[in-house]
Length: 235
Image 1 (cartoon, rainbow, N blue to C red):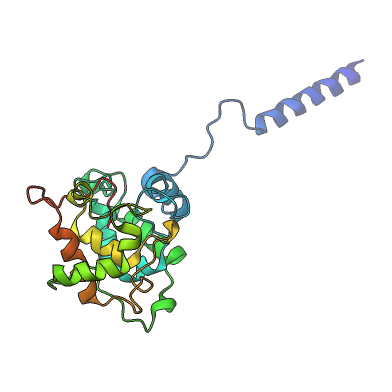
Image 2 (image 1 turned 45 degrees about the vertical axis):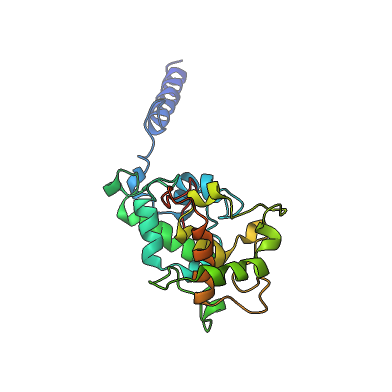
């Protein structure tokens, strides 16, 4: 009997020691990384950008980012500035901590790196003479711009057109010249709007053509209305 009790006692003690080696209930797991340490592009983009720019950078209210032409035209420094500092007067907020946002400079840079890595295709435009992102002081001729508009844009964007008039005063009051320029250059491929190369002109638009079109549209902006940015504009 003594030997049986001793064996049972030994078995019980062994079980207790084995249980002690397991994780007891309530033991905390590994400390998750701080939000400021996350630099994974998919996580950063999904948490902060997808709501306005689409899960895959397309088919959303904001400017599509999964657009190789847009990424070839906009300078990296400008794209980073937009992400970090936002666009005042629009739905695009500042994301950098320096401007009251949630992201560190390292995280902002990780977003730009990810956007370029996943969606830019610089080889497609290696030998292309692309229009400049901004007007760079080039003055447009509204009269010439009107002729270009009637030839290449009116079918979709004229009064009574199927898509809608971009000559509407209310729309123009909410659209900056830069928004108009960017839209003319890169179009909206997710919505079927062609870019500057494929409008009904018989040739790609030149920088002067783009400046002329912007000048024409801007000439119809209500004079009392400043060229404020529209509520989804990210340029």
